[in-house]
Length: 317
Picture (spheres, rainbow, N blue to C red):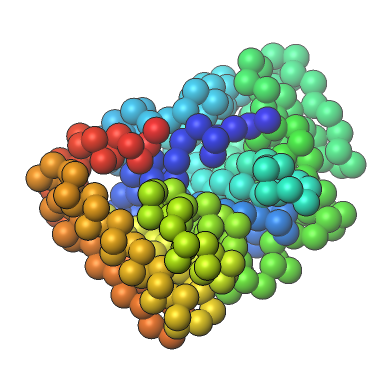
């Protein structure tokens, strides 16, 4: 299984890839390849990352082994990721009734010279497997495969994940396009250079991680079932800004979760160093009409200091 999301937390993915960039939007073909039971979708502007030495340094620091192997295999296949990939998306989706049965499929968008890449595969005697009319190519020594679903869109991941994406794209399985809560959440953030949407299960998991010890109290258990979805966007224009919205469906639940988050921040302020305290002081929490909003903004220099703190290290491991 392609365990990208199992090896790196979402905050690490955000920090490793979020820089000043145009909006990172998915094409129709890319959206059509994402399975219906998506738990979390993260979309980033990958091409712009190459223009930031800080982003590349962070990328190298937190990138998991599986993704490093994928990058190396892609380069050997003839695809230059520094110039050809514009956007990257990672969709974590359920494959059964259990929330523990998860796969991750990656989707790359860009300007690909598919004919040259195919010629390089033939030169290396890499034989594809057919899934209907789709040619799926193995990536040596990674356990991953890739498939071009058109001239500008590639899906990659484990064989199981790519097969699920192809079944979805070809109309043999339900897709994200019929998942109303996810599609509605996307409308609020897909104009950002980096954005993510989470379903109910993904939101519960994220909140449990964020709250830490506060997540075990009775108040959280009472409102957990009311968490519906969440979405966030991040950009590095004029400093660092992060905005998270959690939909709870009613004002009482939103206010309760807001109180829990505030309590968690107070606790972390008491135990953190000066850099961490400054970061937490820059975090604003509010609740209105069933929506919980979290806003974080800081300068580039303060954010760079935060990256070296124990708080950041706990987020990326």
